[in-house]
Image (cartoon, rainbow, N blue to C red; front, side, top):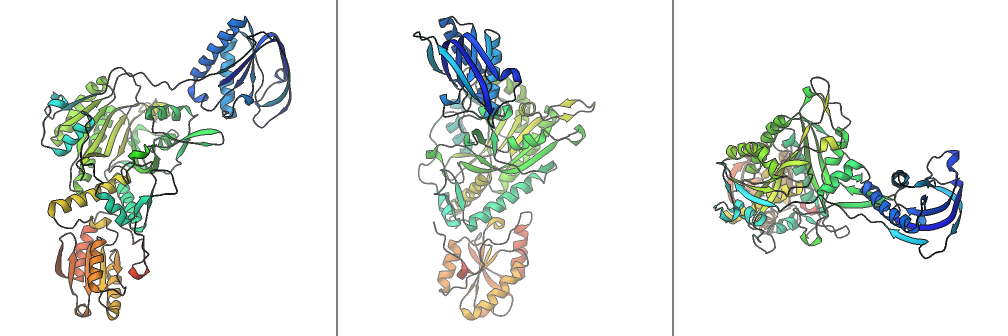
Length: 613
């Protein structure tokens, strides 16, 4: 806010015509005058309304100071846009001006000139040294004061608390997580991660014409991404919840109190943009949209728990030097599930079910998670300790507890981050589940209890497989770890391999047979490519292996007739003899339970373009 004070013998104004932003006024407000007056020319700036009463309190401090100095009892507040080039939207400016008028009216004889009108005015300045003063009113961001430091300790499965420096384990993932999070040590290799080679292979890169941290996906990677997204939705809708899938926008007005309050708790990673003189936050999860929608739903206790799901494009302003393909992005895709529960008991029950599903999914990747349990306060830890212990006993695991400093008014109580050990020896967060006790009230989300009374539910936030990008990261990382452990080529799970079978005709006269076999395989929902290029068969075989194709069949004279083939199986890294029918049966079995999509590029390799990165 900008203020210009003029101590005047008199000040008068008269409205002439209205602008598009003019506030509605009565006839008595179209003219005004005051004698022996302190005139406060005022410009409300962007963000002032979001500071609530603090900006008015700060402005009043300045008014009191100046009025006391010049001994003025009369005050005229005069909106004056010319004091600033960063003006608040009209509706916000009027709210702040009215609040300032009300505050001043309890201490001074106050009049406010109307906002948004063209006016003529006459002022007679007194001309003494203090008659003209300008002020800039600034309210610094006031986070809740933290009392004390972050606290870490290990909670064991037999309910003991152990200091991080005293804890010993042979579990490499837990050790890496503890050292990084609690002891603040550098953990893992500092070399370029191996998974970046797979990003290049399948076509994942930074978009050079966008902001930092924004990815593009060439056809193989786009297929992997979409299959991952379909799978994330399949997981959410497959374990007993009533799931309502929604779609929404990605930007929300920071002038909305609920949005502003929620955003302030998110910290310094807000990704904001300006539009039509308003400030918007790009959503960092699906929370804002789903909460806005659910606040209008009529929900009965009989329908609980109720959940909403969206794969939300989310935006987080990560530091430019910390962005990593697939893992740390400014634009990411969050398969966000929010579960509305009647009470804490129901929240505990569904948290445990989701927790089990999180572990089931990571086991399918051939690895395991360790838990970092974030708790909003020591009191919240004690209140939720038995529940946390039930999770530890169920998995036979210890966990790392992180107690946040007291004093911050968090909307959540318990948040579990599920970490896996990557190929670089680092513990990486993928899945997450959180208990939210504040946002239902903030966004006015209610359900009707058995007596018809409105109640605020407890909300569970969860991304069971993590973000789509981190799920892909986990798949790539596991492929590389399997290769390192076995000494064999890495491979992707069959269902997500961009090209599941490739047929290699030795010469032109074998192409028709290869095309026939490909058509038969495609009828069974198998992604099949045919290398119809004029290359030697050894080069075709080499490139098929370089492209991580799951199965490769050379089509020569022997394969022109009959149903027996020599098939290269990448997972086994071996040539095996089989029939087309046996291959189909094996592929169908591996595909079972997973989503399917057709190939995202021509099946003939001669028609494909080179997108090498």
